[in-house]
Length: 180
Image: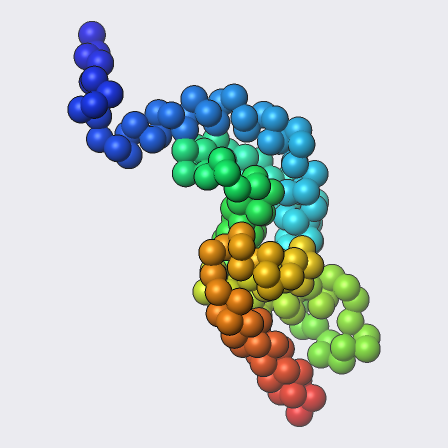
């Protein structure tokens, strides 16, 4: 028979996990119904394949269930879910790249399809840290302002501006190098 540990003697992490599991069981189903289409849209945009996007979406909500205790209920759930989606999709893309070699893509931007542009941007984003990737995706995909990103991420506008400038510089360098 398993003994119950009194709440005041339970380690904080275990206590948070137990509370999170209770909260997550109640809320994740609702989050899935309300925001599943947004998570799917993000995954589909990043991965470019509907079947992988569905798998990624399921994984996002499994992580939300597992780590629901870490979610700050005073914040909006959509950015949190999209951040999880970003990380899962980038992991899947990294794995995909290891398994298969990327096909040649014509570097002429006037002839690139939207999907080809996304592949180039995603490959470029993978060279940056997760903080920069999150900021760039929020800024360009979600069309959030620097003020909104600052409030959501708890990062100064100056830092956000620097991260966006670093990414823009990398895009410019890529474009210059492709023209040679």
